[in-house]
Amino acid sequence: MKQKVVASLVSAAMVATLFAGCGSSSTSTSTSAASSAAASSAASSSSAAEESTSSSAAEETSSSSAATSASSEAVESTSASSSSSSSDSGWTNLDQFDGLKANDAYEFPVIVKSFQSTYWQAALKGMDQAASELGVTYSAQGPNAESDIADQVNMLNTAISSNPKGIALAACDTSSVIESLQTCADKNIPVVAFDTGIDDAPEGSMACTVVTDNTAAGATAADGMWEAIKDTVTNATDPVRIGEVSQDATALNIQQRTLGFINEMISLVQGAGKTVAVTGNEFYVDNAEGADADEGSADVVIEVGVPAQTTVELCSTEAQTILSKDDTIAIFGSNQVAAEGVLAANANLSVLGSDVSAGDIIAVGFDAGSTIKGAIEDGTMYGAVTQSPLMMGYYALYALTAAANGETLKDVDAPGYWYNADNMNDDQIAPNLYD
Image (cartoon, rainbow, N blue to C red; front, top):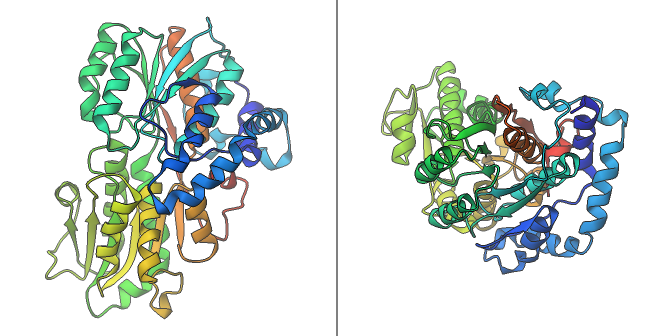
């Protein structure tokens, strides 16, 4: 795969329509049709915070063919605005895909966490482009919500029973798929984990992972937030609180991202000469590193809320609990749904903003979507960290094809980028900010 093609695919994201919506529990259609199917079900979403995104997706569904054409044309473009490749921006181990073509007309099952977040539609758009380049197809499936773990496991097992040449998997709960992955190893079906790594995968089951360095990305969110709150923390004479809404405590990528944020914030707070405590969800309290006080004595309390299920409404409930406390100065939403939950909570409370001197609570998000982008543009949200779901999907399908060809692969690590109102239109950032 030539650098020109990689660079131009990033440019494609700026012009391609990315579909949004909540997918059904039995979505199973090939390549770009999967995106349209998920988008058409958006109207059934019960999440008020996602309705504006879903309605936009419904309007765009009829133009999906034109969007695909625009994306293909953009891949041929060599415009100066996309002259730097993804590998120049922190991606690793891309050379293993140079000149790759499929040895056969493979069809791959792709199991995503859900179509609840527009993140997954961006990933499928990347897969669409890779499929057209490689001469392969894929079928995308995902449960109604990321908390529907059993449904996803059933989809994975059904895919395994068809003996495919490879499977791409973004696991909702990594521990739940171990038995299925052992079956893959026994049947010599290579699995590419994307978005979420699986540390305890049985030997021989994983071809490679294509994931964001989530620990570093969580730390990036903490660093971005710190710029806004460091003077408040340093000069505070009374205890202050920093909140975090984390979508779960089971998926490895969310665990790493949340702990990356917590541990970096602990380091920053202690560097300012303050003591810190971590409270809330037991997993994150037990695994945080370096906290040196309890809630009753700490200068800074980091409170972590985890909803019972991954929905905007339940994330909003967790956020409201934290935002309603008088000592809260900042809050972080660890993925698109959690960040939208923070913004939904603010619809009732009106406490977020970017002016610390005026008493605004600083909000930082993760991922993108029209709701988050709009909040950053109008100053409600201070900033966020974005992954590159489009390129993650793209490389996941390249990795699947290489594995099906019998090649031995190295893991592909992706960066996370801090963005705010000042840089969200920059060439490196804008392609990753899906709608």
